[in-house]
Image (cartoon, rainbow, N blue to C red):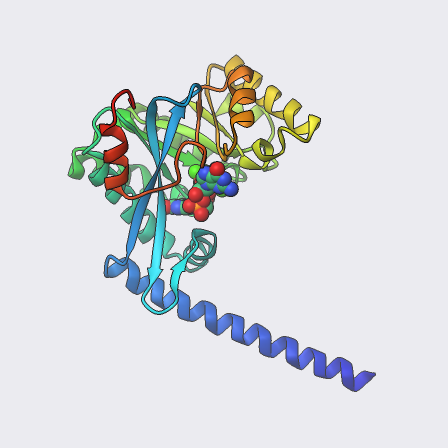
Amino acid sequence: AKNEGRNRACIYDAAMDADLSERKQLEHDLREAIANDQLRLVYQPIVNGSGDTILGVEALSRWTHPTRGDIEPSQFIPIAEHSGLIIKLGEWVLRRACTEGKQWPGLSMSVNVSALQFRRPDFVDTVERILRETGFDASCLELEITESTLIGNVDNAETAMHRLKSIGLRLALDDFGTGYSSLAYLRRFPFDKLKIDKSFVRSIERSADAAAIVHAIVGLGRGLGMRVTAEGVETAEQQLFLRAAGVHSMQGYRFGRPGSPNLISARLAMPGSH
Ligand code: C2E
Ligand code: CA
Ligand code: CA
Ligand code: CA
């Protein structure tokens, strides 16, 4: 039995080593991908409550690896964060979104910002520089951050957020309801928008609890003067519920999957789409 245990430990270690070298390899490849423009952005429409008007888009990163094919953001974003590559990646994303977004004047552009990126002392300067270099209208830019950005970093985050607001852009709290932050955060930080996490939206129809939580989030957001967006909207029933609940805007496969810039342009060219 003792032997068995030792063997198991060996197998486990070997698996960990394989994982580690696999991650190191991906990290190396990701570094190349960022340097050589092998990443691209896709854009998902954000629509009004009735679903007939595109108000904006969310930029989402995509990586097609030369030999492994498509790798999900849920896989490569953590690698980027772990290795520090997220700083370069995040800057690339912001610049690309502002550059490509210029072809859709008046449309809101939402960009995800990771906690490590946001916490950099030079983050606000970087945003300002990219806006200047690309000529993108700051009032059309919305940065999405998650609660993890705020935890343990309250004073710095508050200062950075006020500086960003003074540049003219907007701030959204992403994945709302999934973290641990206190409601006091909502009062303290100048968020313009709450994004209801898709885990709640998914359960609306079969869970009275999820439905109650969604109602509460909308009431909270509206009461504090924020816009409320629901993400992950897939069905007509979900849309109806959310609209009745008072959500301002929605995003999800029901209104369009993330797509290439050309796809967004084509959508916008359709009569009555915005
Ligand atoms: P997120 O910011 O919450 O983005 C929404 C995710 O939900 C996207 O996944 C989107 O494709 C997916 N989605 C949209 N509509 C639906 C729907 O109706 N049903 C379902 N099941 N999913 C839907 P994606 O593109 O795989 O991105 C996953 C996460 O990776 C994002 O979650 C975000 O946290 C992160 N991410 C993606 N791109 C970037 C980036 O450029 N920078 C940073 N920091 N994070 C990013
Ligand atoms: Ca997001
Ligand atoms: Ca989200
Ligand atoms: Ca997320």
